[in-house]
Image (cartoon, rainbow, N blue to C red; front, side):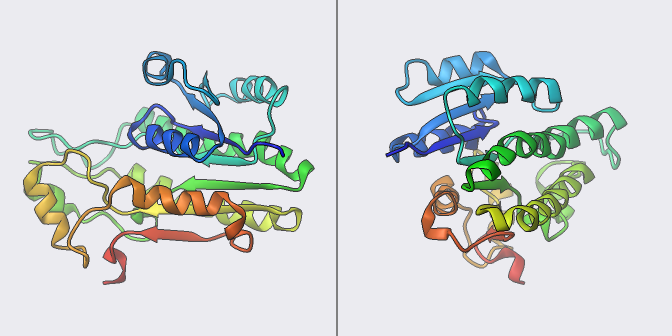
Length: 253
């Protein structure tokens, strides 16, 4: 029986590492892609059923080279487009409404162009094999705008940048487009959109967030991974083109 192969971009990040570890435990061959080679080596040296690759997914030549390396030995039947640049709030940050153009380009390139290029090569291979699941990682900000009041009270002068909202709305468009295009070939494309995930936020910010979430808590990463795993397996074989929110009810109010 052929082993399932899961390719994860942004695999050296906070959630990327957890995705890799989970799919390894589930018996997948895991291929981790990230631009940060040192972090990859530090995290994943000597792991069985695991390979890591350094790649700038914003460069088509780099993605093509990655595809050629991987395709010699593996058929990727699960692609998780996780790579992203998210602005982290800091206290005493200057109030900046508009990002620099170079930051706009960089952030959109990593998430949107990078995901597009990964689908262009690995998704097309799925089409040839008539099998595959592509899972794009979104956010609750794919359907709502950021509540800037939450940031203002906890992080002086901080404004969540427009780029993140544009990217996550764009990821939804990318998801629907390829879901429609690939559906007849048994390749599914979905998006998982988490709300806030607990990760060393300040106690004040946590309190502000829980006040706007009906379940009155943030999610644990495993609650996100469970859905991703479901979408990666045959149990979700009739689900495509969906943006599934995991937000404790935040977006229903």
